[in-house]
Amino acid sequence: MLRFTLNRLAQSIVVILVVFSLTFFMIRLAPGDPFASPKAMPPDVRKVLVERYGLDKPLAVQYFTTMGSYLKGDLLPSMSYQGMWNSKIIKDAFPISLIIGLSALGVALGLGLPAGIIAAVRKNTWLDYGPMSLALIGICLPTFVMGPILIAIFGLKWRLFNVAGWFEKTDWVLPAVTMGLIYAAYIARMTRGGMLEVLNQDYIRTARAKGVPGWRVVLVHALRGGLLPVVAFLGPALAGITTGSFIIEKIFNLPGLGQHFVSSVFNRDYSLILATVVLYAVLLVAVNFLTDLLVAWINPKVRLS
Image (cartoon, rainbow, N blue to C red; front, side, top):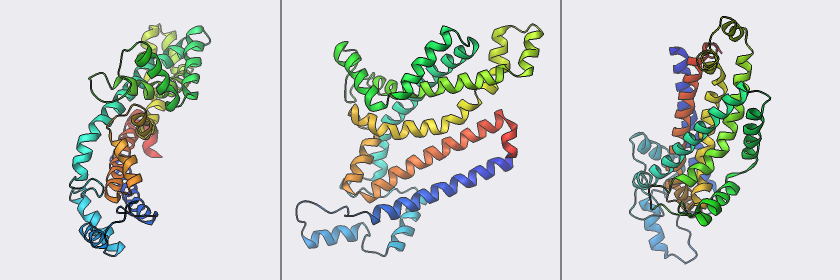
């Protein structure tokens, strides 16, 4: 297990380094610069700004200087928000994105797991066909369709929640449910498939033949192996929830980190783009790392692969 963990840790570090390097060079190869403006900027002002942010230095010097700052935990100042440091922007905006993302994941697991387990246990009954039909509809509906539907019903018609903004304690509900419902559909179908495969194993039939109660067969003997596909899916699911939050934050006008990422791209804010991309990369790599460890703990065969 130690060798497996160190191997995955080394891979994670390499991935973060590659993401950092590709992002750094790609944003500088894009047309324009952070100080391009429809209004003409005086040459002396532009020169001062370029020197302040070190853009007058060779690209290799900028790269290693930036990497050194990141290794020290310094995310550098924003180039579009004058006087604002990227760490402060992330500190203010990221908690909102985190609340939405974790809530959406909770909705997805809370709805998807029971639906998939019940569908597997009650195979070929209405308790199977009903949830799986709804799951198929959920998979087919993207977030930019599901969001306006929920806004129209729960925000405009029934007036239970705000349709936009971040003002009340319940403003996370609609965005989280919008993302969570779609991933609940995936989790439900994956749970059903994993549980059906395990429930057909010989040791499950043996347990039933010995008179083990049905609920114990499902929850104790079958659940651990049946949830293996879902555990492996959690990493990509969180990646989808994270990238999907860009659209959700735009639909619900949330002041999350996704909004800053989109605006930084339009403003060609090199430092803020790099800071947000690296943050998302670290989070996703960390989640995938933990997911790999959890899968290896559940299924020891993975450690030998």
